[in-house]
Image (cartoon, rainbow, N blue to C red; front, side, top):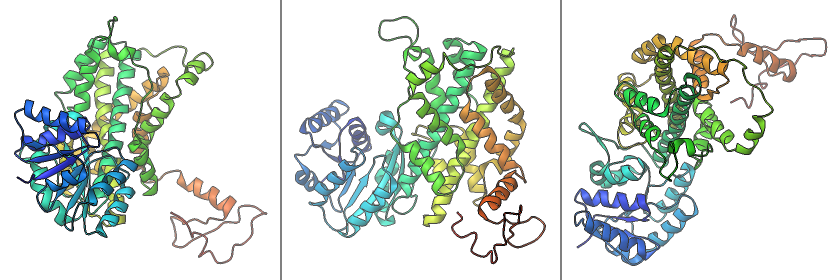
Length: 487
């Protein structure tokens, strides 16, 4: 009996997604470079309810077990391993078959692979998967991009296996090849920002307010029943409560080395923000914070050399806790606004026609950034498809306006206490720059014209202008070409 779909790559994510699909009634062929992983997956399927999973012995046998058009999900390490896996499988596949890469891949690589496979008349979909190991097993957020007819062929499977929020599946067609990986990349960038914002709130709670781990855990648990409800808020409470599991006293979180690892998707998001000329300071600040965390030895030495405030400000605990909640909400809205701005700019440039409301919908369940806030974001971008920025949606603007003073108090408190709040302050700076009709950019442009003859525009008349700022400056003549190369 032929299998409905195949999954190649049986690390924990691959095993769990194969079991997820089988749990929903689809017969799944599984394959892996190491035969032991195939055996282990088949054994898990038997133990977890005699699920319809079929093992295979190598690429040819794996492909032979699939019904036509063949549908294959690959979950292997991004980069060279993906190319090698595609080459091995494609050798046994035919026109009209479909390969779906579910890894965290740099989207130009996905576009290249799509073009290479199109020459063989094999369809290729790049599909970001978020939710970690638990999401893969119980319902992740799935972000696909590729040929529409190929998506239509796999849609019944993916819709059933994705996370469900109410009557809606956390998946859907995002656009041509590359779009899915791009949206997943930005999802991860927002994730970086969200995690950094929560860590800054934790830092103030612990080192300014003086809260214990149990007090902080209780507060995060309380917040998780409010507008701040999210996966990351939920797990933060659990993390703070966890006692040391290595036989020592105290809590696990206090024993963890303060160096944050990363796989590169946050860096890609910041690079893409620059490429699209979209400001994303919250995400950039979170990336910089990871870089600085990695310089542990330097920071240990600097602690004995560089000074901070000698006296910390007196604080009212109840007021600070209230302000922290408002500041975190505001900064999270701003982080989402930046991420959606990156997606919109890239979609317009590459003519992907990505639906931002669909992005918000598919992030509402299964994924790491799932949050109650996303329901309002989905409604906002559905209500106004030309919304310039999430912050100016009437609902979110009202919330930001009402909470911005608390936000400012938290940033000020952090600075006065010598506690860095890079993502929180970057978010506030973004908000303040965006809401002002006139910025000091006029002076920067005047400086550019002074040293480089880059010209400028005026607010009181049309045209392009250059000023002879001092006696060393000369008339530039025709100014038409002076702005060539401007982004």
